[in-house]
Structure formats: C-alpha cells, structure tokens
Length: 419
Image 1 (cartoon, rainbow, N blue to C red):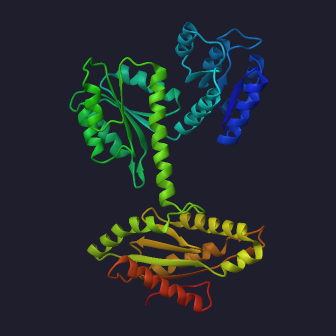
Image 2: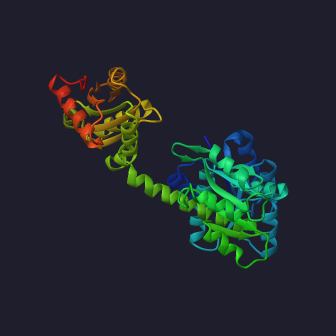
Image 3: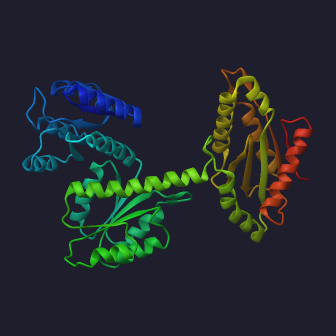
C-alpha cells in the first residue's frame, strides 16, 4: 500500500500532519524525526513510499541533505520548513521538489494537505504535452511526471488530435489535461484548442496554452478560443504546478458535482433521472433501426422483511451488494439504474427475445448466490421484461413492470417476459 514518508523533528507538526493525512486522505504515514530514521524507513519499505514531506532542519543533517537524499532515492518530495529565504527557495526548486511550504501561518498545513491530495490523485490522470520542440516537450513532461501525472506527447496539433481520439472511451477521454504551445507547424495552438472544444468542453478536458511570444494579445486569443488557462515561457516551476493543480482541482469538483447529480447516493448506480438521459437515445436508435432491445425491471423479494428482521443498516448493505453485482454483470452498452427502494431498471441493446430469458436468468441466479450477515441469509429477486418496442421508452418500462408484478404473483424468484 502506498505511503507518505514524513521527516519532521517537531512532534507538534509531525502528529498534526500525520493525523490530517490519515484521517482526511486515508493515506498511511510513516514518520521519522531525523535523517537516520528516514534512511531506515526507506531501506525497509522503499517500494511503498510514494511521496516524502521533508523538514530541512534536522538534528543529524545540514539544510538540504534530506532533499538530496530523497532525490537520489527518486522519491517525489515536498519541503515543509520554517527557515526560508530567497536563496534557499532557489536551491529548493533546483532540487526538483514538487513544492515547498513554509510554517508561517495556520493555513500552511491545509495547503500542504491539498498538495498531497493532488499528487495522489494525479497518479490516475494523464496529461498531453503538445509542442514542436522536443526539448520543450521533455522539460514540460519532466515537471508533469514530478507531479505524478502520466504523460503523453505530440509534436503538433494534428498529432495531438490523433492522440486524443485514441484515448476516447465510452465514458469520456482518458486525458484530463492538454498543455499546448502556440507556434507549431500544420496546426497552431489556437486551432488545436478550437478543434478540441468542438468535442470536449472545459468541464471535461482542461487546456493550458503556452508561448514564448511577447504578444500581449496571445493570452486573450488562447482563452477566447477555449483554453482554461495560459502561461508565458519561461515559467517558474512553482507557478506551473499551481496552475496545473488549480485546473485539475476544478475538473475534480465538476466531476464530483456531476456524479452527485447522476448517481444514487447509497449504491453509486445511475439514478432514475440519468437513466432516462442515457437510455432515450438508445431507444431511439433501436426504433430507427428496428433492432433488438430489452427492458427489464428487477426487484428484491421480501425486502421489507430484511429491514424488519436485520435492521436498515443491513438492508442498505443488501442494496449496495445487489447494485455492485448488477453493475459487474453489465456489458459496456447496457444501462442500469436504481429506480427507487429495492427496484432496478435495465436497458440492454442487442438482446433478442430468444436470448433474453437466458440473459435475465443469469442475473437472477447470480443475485441468489449473494449472502449476508456471515451467510445468515440470502436474497432472491423477481424480474419482468419485454423486447416489444413500444411507442416510447416509458411504455416499455410499464410493460416490464407489468411482468415483474406477474413474477411476484407467481411466487417470486423468477423471470417472466412478455410473450
């Protein structure tokens, strides 16, 4: 499991930072009070240390020794120090640290925690560097990799669009950030951004423009064409990191808001409203092509008895486990959502009337294998479905619900489909 190494000889700061990281970020911290202790920790668990937070004032080391040691061990580092001046700042930044934080205000620890959180989030994010200069691409990529971002490169705008298309998936783009120069052959930065914005919004993909031009209007040109931000070359690494962090933090906040708006709070599945948003175009496509489409309603049998017998907390665990199992069984093209209570709705394109019984029986059987309260009880589900394309999606759901009721009336724990 990934850990943070904290090298801090002041007990107050050590305890405070450890508690904040472990409680708010749920990342384990291993602490040392001196350089010798840091060496021992790294000898024992080097592969587990993903990030180091380093104080410069240690009893057994000179001011930059611990920074140089972390660099030798190739451990990304943040300096957290009370001693600071302009000369020291230059030396810190020359040592390839991610950032430095001074112990000079109550907000210092908050800022430090935000950096740690950003660095760990970056490991699952990818940035694309677009510049016709191989030297510039290498420098920018080096900074991004310091911040633990995955990095792709392109030498011009056309190549960048190819990379973006290759990284497009059904759920969005695997690339979160594009950093683009302006002057490039075949397609300049402004043209690239216009092309990007035809397909990906600012809420989905952040773009930072770069240029060494002295033109006062270039930043405005970038922004007006759809860039999220702009930096002039040469830039300070710490400003570069701040701009990247701010833009990725904004994407994270928007993603969290979108998730809250589209997902059921308890199970994490799509909610009823978003189901219709996703399912409507699939229904329209099936109607236009006269292709196979299955709509099914799935309901947990005797769920009220579960709540009454074992309590609502256990009932919630049942719902979450059922949701997880259902989601895990879906194909990429399927849409499933919690409709409310213990009821779920499934839309499955390209499932014929002949294939539907077997498809839904697998779901029913899989859910019957779930056990709860240390195998004290299991659950069953009833499923109703239809392949008959109706006048609209609501009519298909109504039909599926009708056959779900029939399954309940026939004794539950079964699948009944429209004839």
